[in-house]
Amino acid sequence: MAGMSTQAPTARDTGFVRRVLVLFTLLCLPALAAAAAEEPVAAAAISPLSPVHSPPHSLDKAIYQRIQRAELVARVKISSVHRLIDSALSEPGMSAILGYVYTGVAENVWKGKPGDLVAFRLTLKDCERKLKRGAQYLIFAESDTLGRLQLADCDAAIEEADAATLLAQLNQFYQG
Image (cartoon, rainbow, N blue to C red; front, side):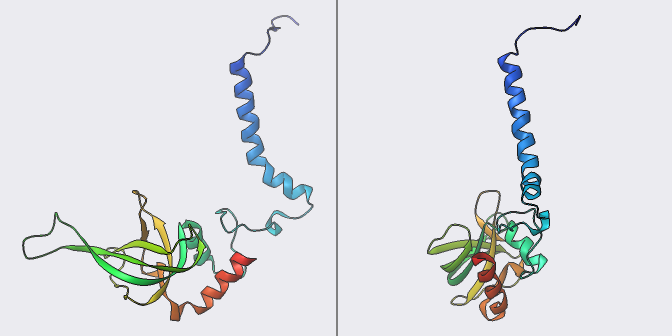
């Protein structure tokens, strides 16, 4: 065996091998687990937090994708509405409103940190409709670049009267 080195592997080589094995395990483990259970991958249990699975039959695909993107899915009763002012565009006697900051009480939380008070933003660029103080909404809030909760569009806030079927589907989806 001419030309082969008999040196022991270095710590650097061992670390590289470990990283490759961990990466391989993480990539292949779901497929191996499904094969070991002798079930097709599509029949595996769907986690509500996993973005790679297809939606269950009880949820519309668009709603399922909205849940996956959301940081918070909750039924909220709006207690206060505050203007979001753009001071750069405002002039004396005239305020440029970018949108609104809503605060409310989270009555049900399906995804996200449970808590009583919720604050989120909705810009007029994303939705020209103003939410009503005292009304209840099912919201799908995402985090912006600064970590604040915001709604992506008008469809991310559904009045409770219009959300009865969806609320039942969410209860079924999260309770299994």
